[in-house]
Length: 278
Image 1 (tube, rainbow, N blue to C red):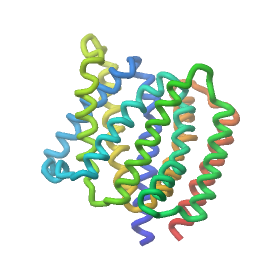
Image 2: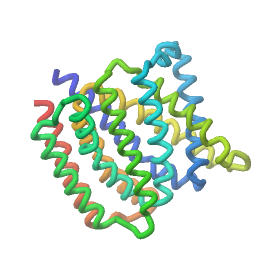
Image 3: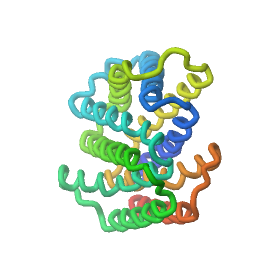
């Protein structure tokens, strides 16, 4: 049991690190939101399709059933909101809003699967929220309400996906991700800038697609072995990591309260996951 939990935590930590680069990729692309979504999705469809074909798993992954189809639809909606959110608010704000996912996932799991979170998870979630509030005080910017709303939509979608994989752990991981990307290619094809995009930008978006695909699949694999609230608490590590990457790559210096709030969240995450492994 401990080994299974440890593997799930490892997958989720890898997912967090990969997801934390999203804001940096979006900013480096220097394109509008619909164009970034479209290009990222095109490369995702191509990369994932090649990988599934090489492994001979196209049929197995596409037989995802209703849970997989629901996960794909939610992932598409979440991605459509997630990527543009970085263009309308700060990277720190997006990470902070995502830190509320433990409450969202816990509420969904409680009301849907009748699995109330443990006392340790509740305490960890409260501590994560306290850290997030500290980050908000140091990082909120004026005029970012639309971006904050997009980040909130993404948070609800990802929390719901986590619950789906907990309820139906046999659901394929790659199939729903491929479905989500294909849906986004179709949905944004009439709104994206496709011609005259510099090759450097195309290369950046190809790398973004590869990293994002890995992050999505790792999240779905890791979510199978843990309570949804545990999964979301681990995912809250994105709160301190994403702003730090933005500072390192883009020169966006996080506020003192951002660093302090991130530290609170890190402590909450490790305390909660340690209790889950006991």
